[in-house]
Length: 184
Image (cartoon, rainbow, N blue to C red; front, side, top):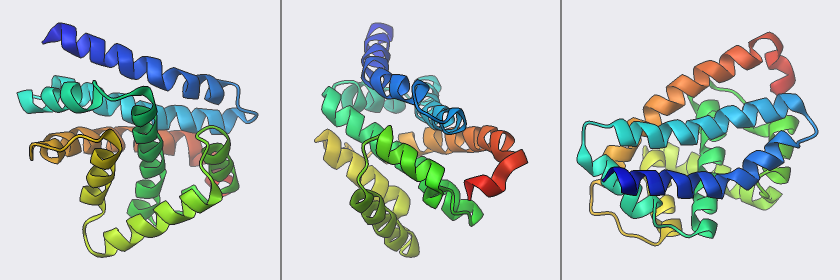
């Protein structure tokens, strides 16, 4: 199992590297730092899945994320980056996602179009009103990965994701605290 996890993490790391390079080369160091925290949300989610007391969490990581093609996993990461900012706005009543700095970063680093940003915002907002935004995220991830869940996926991914969100939101708050108005 350890070898499979190691191969899975190496594959995930290889796939996200071009986005990290684009972030490091981004014109605004402040935006780059914010996106680095968003990447850590993804990384910490995977680490939390590995460290979970439940074997199923590791199986989801290996069998769903670990075997994905580069293109599919990049699309999942793109969706998770969007989710990181969207969820933060909804939890705290902010407009971080609509800030020019974050908006431009989504377009330039993650190749979002304006229509994609608006569409995802509307889709998730509608699902949030119905209390289904988190499960909708999982359905979109499954659709991108092209793998059906055995029913355990969201059960074991969401605790890992939730813990990672909380920890990285704290880091983001510390980074933006002194100049929050320019982000909003």
